[in-house]
Image 1 (cartoon, rainbow, N blue to C red):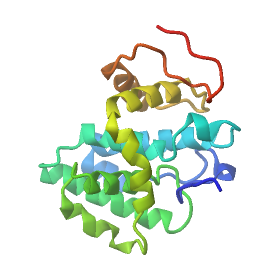
Image 2: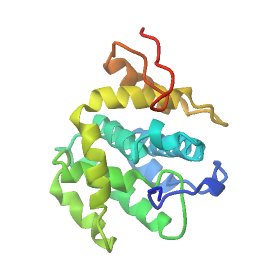
Image 3: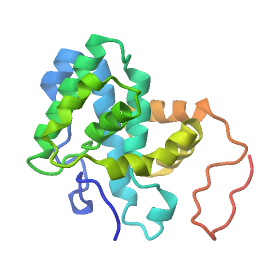
Length: 205
């Protein structure tokens, strides 16, 4: 059976669905919160767009939207900054409250923060945020572990793949810039392999 996070279902596709963007938090925390929320929303839109494709499971690793969101937030947040951690605390609390009422785009953000804490990339002071979960997503953490063996490579390939997905409306400019930066930080010898196993080989760059 195909695994899935309790985020947005395919039939809920589109920005007409509620998103994690919280205007009050945007006003309080400013651009860092806005860019984080927009990025999470956009990569979740990519997930919704591609998950119904027959080859999705072979092309896109489970939890890729969590991994990319985590990579992005770790680039935005200083783990020693009380201001940045307060922003994360507020963002996670808001998403958990929203997602309790139904699917929302960007709801993978708390999973990204939780994974970062379990890996030691963010401080344990954030762990109490997840006391509301009856069961911790340990299986997800295990599924993401291989991606963290070479995070720059995996992020570059996934960022390139996300940029190739046609969305309407298109990716927000800050998201596109962030994905392009992920792709640019690691130059592979070959283009990202977007073909399923047994498919045609990608041409070298």
